[in-house]
Amino acid sequence: MKFWKKIKNSLKNVLFGATVTNIVKTYKKMAFEMNAALMLVTIGDLIGVVVIPPIYKYNLLVHWFPYINVWKRDLLREKEFLEKLG
Image (cartoon, rainbow, N blue to C red; front, side, top):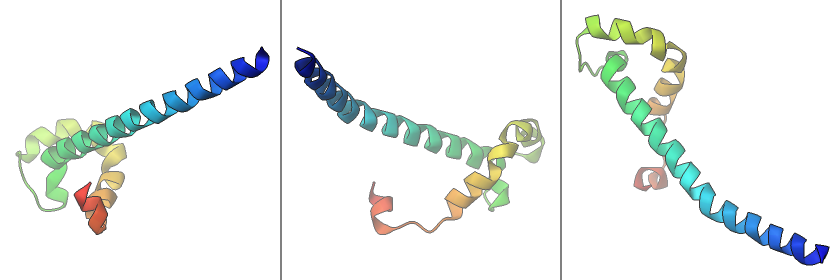
């Protein structure tokens, strides 16, 4: 009886992992892209893209300060051919 219960739990975990992993990856990618787009609008003048006047971005700079280096590194990173497709 315990053997079949273990098999059932293992299959359930594999199925759950196979379905939910893709959803979580997609959500994380979308969240990062939305965050990057918002950062581009607010502090894009660091890389030469000015969208809003500087007076408004100073209020948001306090919230974005910990993420600036990560954002610049990802934005300026050389992308592979397959990364651009997906």
